[in-house]
Length: 128
Image (cartoon, rainbow, N blue to C red; front, side):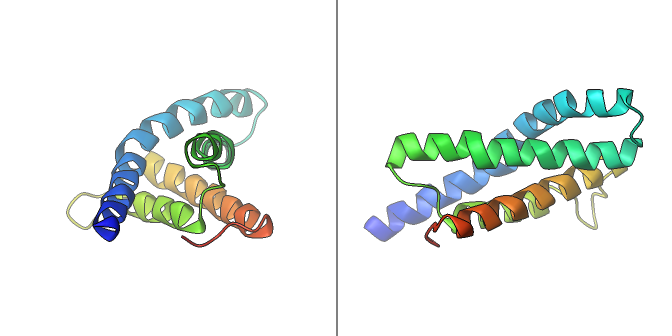
């Protein structure tokens, strides 16, 4: 029964990262993208940088803090890997082609998640 509940928990995390996280990432990314646009950084690079910063902020601080409050430990690396799976799942398919903004947003998010995986590994996070 414990394994079944664990699987349900991780599926719920994946669903939240696939749907709810995108809204948060877009909102936080816009906050970072506006100043980059005003200082003259090219739009594509600005979107990637803004979403990378937003992903680091969300995964590295906000979700990390929520996990720490809820479970008393840092999130495992599997959490970040599920974030990569969620980014892949929300990046379009052969049937539904993603637009350029979605591709840039996903690129920035993946860079931010890789950075957070490196930080988690450095600080000794477990895999599961």
